[in-house]
Image (cartoon, rainbow, N blue to C red; front, side):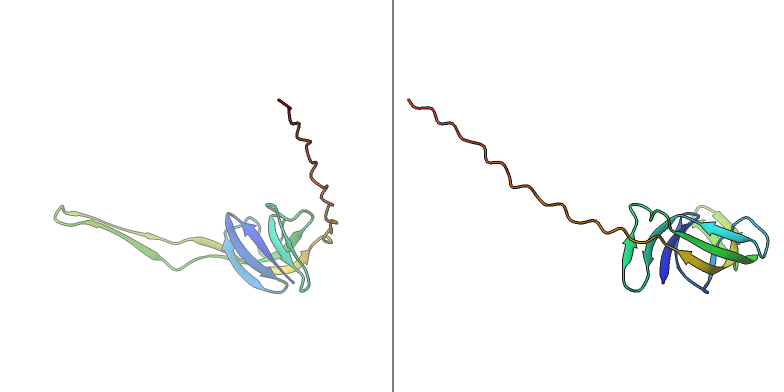
Length: 127
C-alpha cells in the first residue's frame, strides 16, 4: 500500500516503514505527525484518486531528526560591468518515518442510467 502525500507544497510517495526527507516540520524527535492532505491511495487492488484530496485518508509519521542540507552556491555575474555576487544557502529538512497509512473504503457508485434523449416533435406548418 502506498499514498501520495502533499507536505509543505511538495508531493511525496509514502509507504509504510519508509523514511522520507521532507521540508522542516514542527516537533521534536519522536513526535507523531498526521498528514491528511492525501492525493492518491493505492492498496494493491484498487486506487483512490482525490478530487483534489481523498476524504478520510490519513498518513501517520514519526519525526526522526532535523537537519540542514548540503550548502549550494548561488553566483551572479554580469560581464564587463564589474557586478559579481556570491551567496550560499542551506535548506532545513526533517527526516520522518511513515508508520501507518489509513484509507477509507472506496465507495463504488453504480453508474446512473442515461435517460433516452427526448425527441422533440417537429411541428410542420402546412402552407
